[in-house]
Image (cartoon, rainbow, N blue to C red; front, side, top):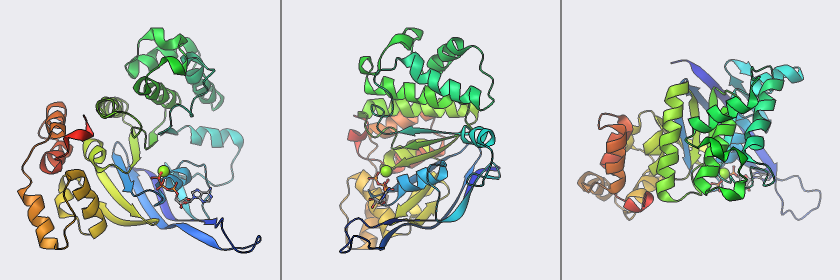
Length: 315
Ligand SMILES: Nc1ncnc2c1ncn2[C@@H]1O[C@H](COP(=O)(O)OP(=O)(O)OP(=O)(O)O)[C@@H](O)[C@H]1O
Ligand SMILES: [Mg+2]
């Protein structure tokens, strides 16, 4: 599988806010030499506790924050290299973003038609082919499972899940190769989360997209992702190349995250923890949902079947 996005030795620090001197130069290192590859057609999960630097990395990967050190290559092109505005726009539309806060990421005065239309205009400006805006908007609404009649609705006339579908349609409008989803389902209720993950999965397959899925919820990673990077204090502390192999986690941090979704206490003894994992045979409603939807032979289904015991995740 070819690499669509490569990050090499990314370093970011921010000026510390609370310093004794007004002109203090102390900095907080937020990302420490992060390198990663995103392969064509895969969903790469990035998980870590709050403040570990996930969104900062997302901003760097999507061209919104130039790192102090390191490079980001999108389909082989360095995204921070100086280039013409048109070539920059063409490069930028290859990656689209979907955020957690869908209400503030859309203009409340815009109808669905304008929210998606804005994105279509950006696409056209960057040289994309889109002559029939309304027709394309209908297609996009259909792709995200919304009726054509929603085109005239305002954001406040939509549920959270419906509005997030509009945000996904807006992301698809630029015909991206990659979508970066930063906590994109975290604000939704449990059953809507599953519906949106199903939608993302279907769209990914039909369009051959690659996803970067940032979250602090390991359960959703097991549902959607092929690989996962565990993030702590701005460093990748563990990487799992096959989601079905979560049982062989090495670091205490990653194990802790796994145990917390299983509702297991954190034991002092590593052996006790391992015993708990092995004896975990209860199959949760999430596992059943996963199994039914994905088919028992999918690696993700296997992972959740084996590990999840917390039905509340999907309600
Ligand atoms: N523009 C900024 N200026 C100063 N500090 C920043 C800035 N952006 C992020 N930070 C700091 O960088 C650290 C990492 O923040 P980031 O938003 O990347 O974390 P996160 O892993 O996405 O957290 P969460 O799960 O809560 O979204 C935090 O300590 C944050 O305060
Ligand atoms: Mg964040």
